[in-house]
Image 1 (cartoon, rainbow, N blue to C red):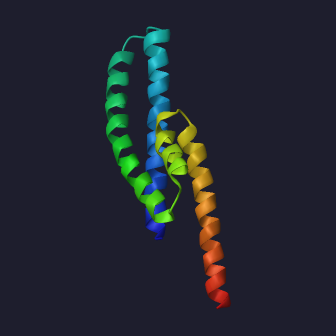
Image 2 (cartoon, helix red, strand yellow):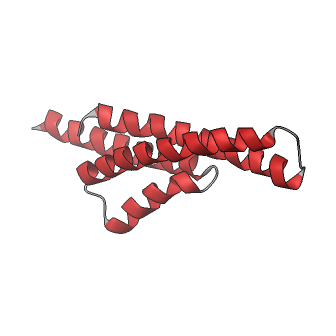
Image 3 (cartoon, rainbow, N blue to C red):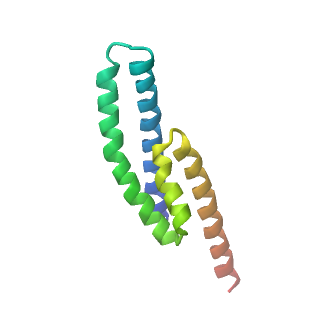
Length: 112
């Protein structure tokens, strides 16, 4: 698996995660605190998150299919972009796992 597949997933995981946190804070400001101007902020960030989440789904699915993940793991990674802050934790776990797998494969090739 190419490193670029993991890199583009990581970038989209962070972008999606940040936008979802901003959207959550905007919703708290709009509905909980009734702040002026929060309505347009929530609308803008919500639209951006929605479109970028679709790109995140494509990249995460591509990564999962190339890493040959089981369906349950694939679904968890895909849903991580809908839970505030989950994308950050899932991204770190996925990166550590795939880096370890790549290191094992490199060690096997070096021994052969």
